[in-house]
Image 1 (cartoon, rainbow, N blue to C red):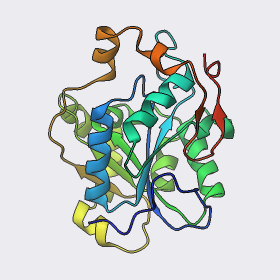
Image 2 (image 1 turned 120 degrees about the vertical axis):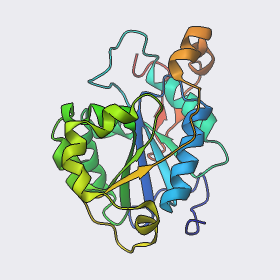
Image 3 (image 1 turned 60 degrees about the vertical axis):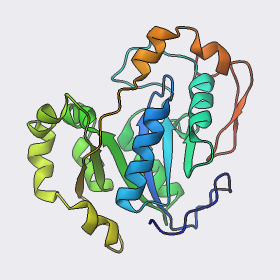
Length: 230
């Protein structure tokens, strides 16, 4: 089991040295697959909690079909209930657009937390297109979670060619003391058929159920109004 985890909903303190995973995405909408893979990564890596960074706007994704930020954050908080997962739109408060800027800002705001970046193998496949991706790898450890159909491309990617030398077994990573970077952990995960794309196709009006009321950010505790992020 991971170390004693912080009680869900407790205030986030800059002085707490918790091992914290960061999973970024549009969460358009969040679904049970996000929750399942997050809890798996928490256990595999010995994390205390994971923050879902609900993006105000992903530079690599089209804006068309993107639900308002409040609706996406609300859907994420529903999926995160009764778990050590915190759904947050902190990037909007930080004013950051790119991952490297977000990580730098979080490091300054929470200097005693130990962060690890979580991403699927689909993102590793295009990681070399991210702004200053090597600086991201140097900022904190990266854990890559297998996704069916993307693993071969991820293993052959330019980013993997550079990161391979820093690979660390999950068990060794979990049991080490203070983390260092670069470090790459590859996690195998049973396929989960759920996807946000399929949910949107089956239920195009899903966001309407999450857009009527403001939602409180689980990390910053700021109220996100329904009109924000439209």
